[in-house]
Length: 279
Length: 239
Image (cartoon, rainbow over all chains, first blue to last red; front, side, top):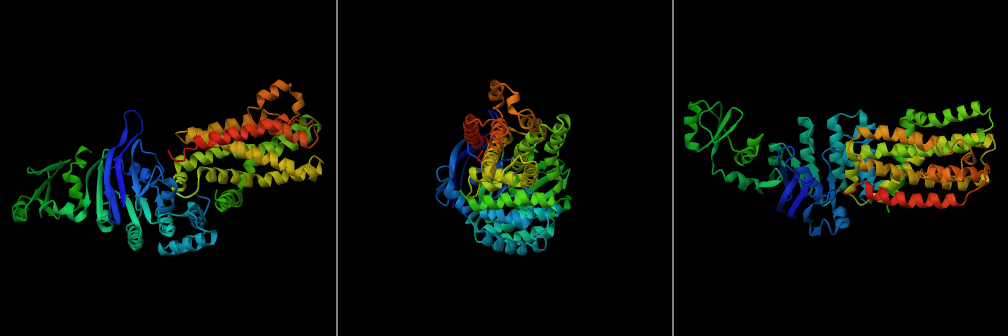
């Protein structure tokens, strides 16, 4: 379990990336969702001991990230969003270095790396210089690192950004096979819905909502989403798109008015909390 | 301390760059070899021994200061440093691994100068260990200086200019390619602000070109300690 206690992060006098976040992340897979600059990466970097919080702290499996950093680092694996491979080294070499930094022996690191690369369909590229790989392949190498690390807690910051749909499914499949606790960030609602049991929605350094996906969706009370370009009736309007949450009985009425009807999904949790309204 | 990680990293990042990017190696040798040529021509060969003795120093210093570009690139651009922060290695392991990789990368240049030194009877086998010790200390010292520079930078684009300037200042101004006795002792102490100066004075003393100055051992050691401590502080391991 991860307990976050009043974590703030201030980069300069005025810029707060996180404004006193408190949460208990209990589920095996938790997704942190938010717009660019919402504070997702800052939170992940603080939890994975890469960044000091300005105030507050957190515990990971009972270990304090500030007081027991060394022990925390023994149980976590964290794949930063912006990390790129060293172009001149091969995926296998870089995975080996990463796993050795996590305490594996050289031969263990080599074997685990090969296995993880194979799992993500990258085995044939294991010895190729990394700068010859496509962007998606490079991203998958980092996911392979997290898989091979076999850490009890894994942080994945936007693991599928830049991947084609097929590669994304491969990564999802690999993540699903993991038994570790996983905290991931993403922009993709379907990814959060596909992979996680719990979501944390962050906006402007605050948690907007947090809970099990089922509970969050059920808060809509079985409503449907009706949306129409330049529609006159709306609860939320984004650009010219009018969005109205309606009871099932009113579906025909809104279809007659030219609205498209959609099932409620994680997008609506975002929309209903006003996260996108300010964009 | 994770010696296996350090050795593997140094080998992969030092040796494989030589194999896979030989142009980098040629580039790193170009300045000292050019200076060797110039010194030989302009002094009619009288100072060739100094230029040969200073060559390995220039190579080690230039490669280590160029490490600022690597360290900044790893931290700011490709975020590899972040990847390693959340592991069992310490900032010291990471810094030592990078420093050692610069030394590995310098080995072909050092070997070339060793051959030249043997041919011109500048380097003797008996003094090899002392020369190597000075080169290792110099690598550590200047690598740490490069970590400080990398840690202070906010944008990667600044690093290329800074390392180019420092590389010239650190390899050409100190008595790397000329006798340190050309300079008043006071100037030597002032130039000792660059660790290349005590290293160059020591090497000239070790190979018997000039009198050996014991004080330079202490200066180099003190600079190594100070820059190592500052390097640890500035590398921004956990920001």
